Image (cartoon, rainbow, N blue to C red; front, side, top):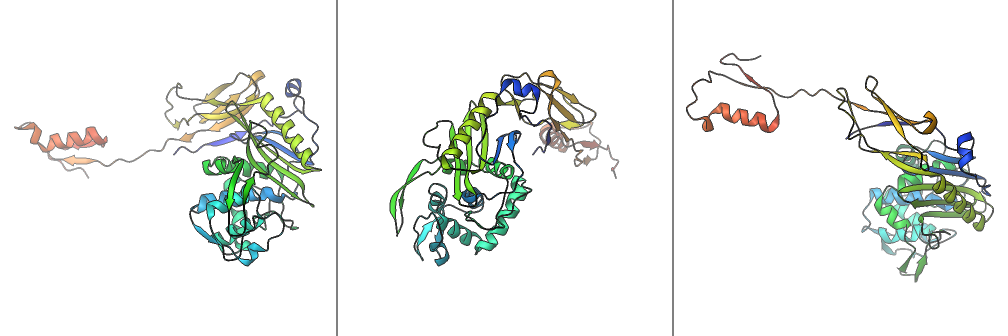
Length: 377
């Protein structure tokens, strides 16, 4: 497996003169906004992106991706009294009811059921508190969050349950790399049958069922957080994550997401750089094609430092976009085979020991020492 270290040098946002000529930045209603390229993680715009705020139900993105990565969707979950008495939006689970984890995930992400969130957390870790510890470890190690602290699986208000738009964008981008998660959050509606409720659940995301380019993922609201929204949009192979926090209304959150999507998709695109035609490097390995965020239609070039093992990627006007540190080749000690001679009188070559060893060399590439009677140390 090839391991890369990728550094993004340029924050592509309106502060740059060249960028401002091409794109007009929307005037967002939300208090905090972050727009990133989902495949590269590059920030295209941010407004108060590092400000700690309350996420509300977009918290459930974390609960869902943890459950998908760690448990089988066919596992049966027994609903507790605590889950049944959850506040806010519910899918009306009953105490003692048994339901497949996969169905609970639908209740969690399509209908934003807080009771489903608690049932999932208790099933995985035995308690909400233990699951919250897992959430913090997971988001830090898997998504690279730095300014978040989660204390519950649903997002209902707690003073210590905080995040940033930048962190939620990282979490959203990470989750969207999982195919099962992508399918879940792209679900527009599903028929629901439980012991306490039978209905059709419609996805609460305000854009999913009306905008073709929107492919997920989650909305949220509690009084202290305002309206929160994480949105994934895709056009011509470019996937963008938009996180808006504390919009004054659901409609303002919707308008911000639409404006952010048009800003990003009309101005930027993901390009893939391939090294398959580059000459062999003695000391370094080239990676598989890597994604790069560029301005729409921008020419891209790169220089390779064979001494340092670094690829420098440039946009127009020699604008340095990123650098890639290549994996260093590792010397591998292969086993040696030693056989004694002499080899001048082989009557039947097909049956000879030498022939069999030479065949082994051809198949495996292991080096041989033909000692002609002298044993190698």
